[in-house]
Image 1 (tube, helix red, strand yellow):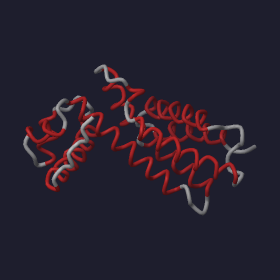
Image 2: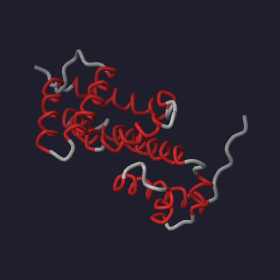
Image 3: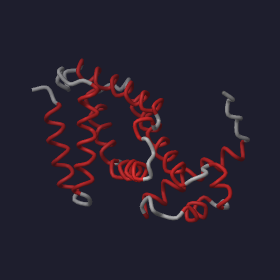
Length: 188
């Protein structure tokens, strides 16, 4: 298998600008926003967008993977926090905040027939490992009950994300649902 040829510096910058613009455009207008708007927001031609992302699904997948990679890095950086319980619950709150956008990308990709379980397996493993570290440290600090594993935590995160999406623009309802989940995780 041939290794991908590294991108030139200008191509890397263009790719990063397209991803950043796509995330902004899709957050503002939804995943059905035209790719031309992404190109315009990035300050590049549509050909540049398609050179990096041959289909809209490839662009959506790249945005989702980039978001997941950033969350994995954030979770990893919180792994050594002085307050493991605070870091754990803060990360979960941040995860839920970005839930509706992540869910929109996932739903759009699933609707387009992209195999979601295979999507970003390396990034998924990175997120899972970082969550494991956050969870272990929070449990060791007595902030989270011991009978919760990473698989349980991921299921709760998915549920909390969908709950946040369901209540939409009602922050009080979102905060209450999140408080119920957090209370269930806390050591009794």
